[in-house]
Image (cartoon, rainbow, N blue to C red):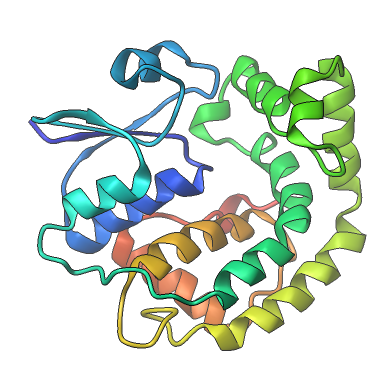
Length: 232
């Protein structure tokens, strides 16, 4: 009986575990949950969360704990103390939310195959400049939230050049196609690659050669497909 991994496709924390499994050759059964499915994760770990790993020891959550558990041969080095990658991620956070979130609910991802799944995502994931508490706790109707998503999608022509410029700043921070930090594959890659994968859902994104090579190489080695074929 192979272990089961419960995920959402778009979720970078879920992708961390999928990537690690591929890189270390850990066979498992991939279980995509609908985004509005509260019962499955709650039955396993007591709340709606992903990823969830289920093996003979029982279910566990927390992506990096799962990665540590499956990497029995220590193939993945610990995280370095680099702050530049984190700073870069923070610098593009608002930009990424505006470009990625509308697209997630437009493309055929398993967690969004039904309207209820898309509704749950749009209900819970704020569109900048809204803060999470205001978006979730306020009395903004769902139709208004969808309208804000569509508005953000409509800003693509203005936002994309900003993102493309930011990617040129990221490129020199990546060591090579095999790892972002010198010295080999590490938790830095488990985190960074999982976040960069989402870029490929954006049609017209200009990935500099080193970033493109890094994405393609680890997609193949980690057995996690990119979104290029469904980019919008």
